[in-house]
Image (cartoon, rainbow, N blue to C red; front, side, top):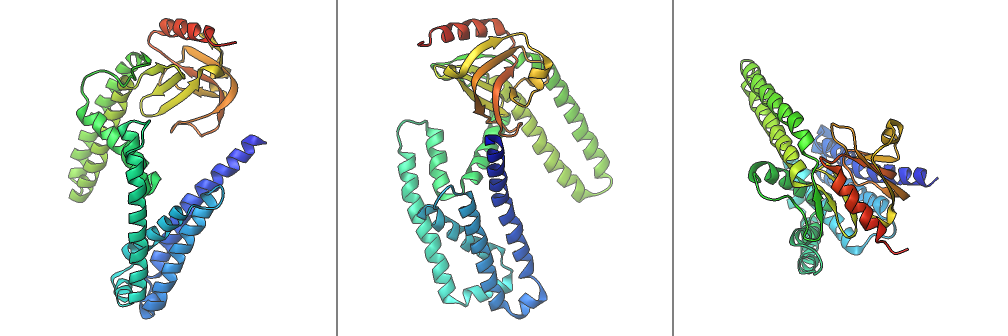
Length: 338
């Protein structure tokens, strides 16, 4: 019953995020029809109403209770910006000829920026978190949090691919790191070589057909290659961690799941394939069979871009040298208060 409730909530949130994009896009197409061109002022009012109403209903659907006033103001500011950006030149000209609309939309946008800037300054000076987290929290006060998370993820991958060619892995001071990238190295190297060959062949073949298609393929294939390099390098820079709080199971950028120590009831190195493939198992082993499984006393929620966000009661992953990890984790578990 709880799983069905979580599934319905997730579907509602997904629908609340996707439907507004479709509705606003359809409204943007409608104001470019001959009928809208014949009655531009009416088309402008309907477009303003459709965008603001759609975004506000999406906010209400995604909110657990009554939306915060800052969120409402942010949605209205986003609607104002969307109307200005998405209107064709004729409709935009009518907008500028209507002072009451221009002043209202400008006041909403400026009010949101001023209020969000004040909150961002408080978030940037907040104690108890690292600098990156503070800046992400500050930017999320001004821009949509989903957009900020996507931008941070993009910059992290690009920075990893282009600028990190050596140095230690990302390991906090109070954690022990355990590598899993060595068994992935041959397969990742082969994948990179095949990708480079594929890019070269695409450029040669498509270049004889269309210059525009060549430029498009150049951007897509080269960006994809950079992303692949960043992902492969992240396997070394983001090892599995054993921290005072628990086991932080990581698989590069793909998986980052904290398993609390008090939730672990057993460590196993021998298990069946049915258990690994069970939907209640978070399998963090990439391109290999796992050699460690942690059994939990309660279900935990997934944090992974590979799996759906359902609960799990087992965690399976592979380490290059599992013996030191199992010994240290068993000792940590034995030190827990009874």
